[in-house]
Image 1 (cartoon, helix red, strand yellow):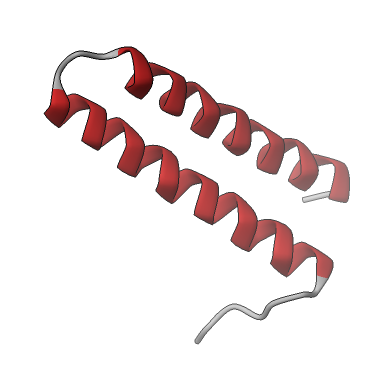
Image 2 (cartoon, rainbow, N blue to C red):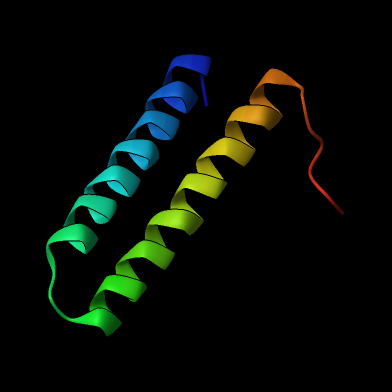
Length: 62
């Protein structure tokens, strides 16, 4: 996977996480809000981890 593809994938994950956060803020169902926020949090965390690995800041745990 090229660097541009990885950057694009990371950007897509961040955008999706933001969309989930936005949906969570607009839902009235507390359970759905929590589910969306947790999904957004995991996606954001994953994008940060991949970004860090790509830049050499962190190493994946084995």
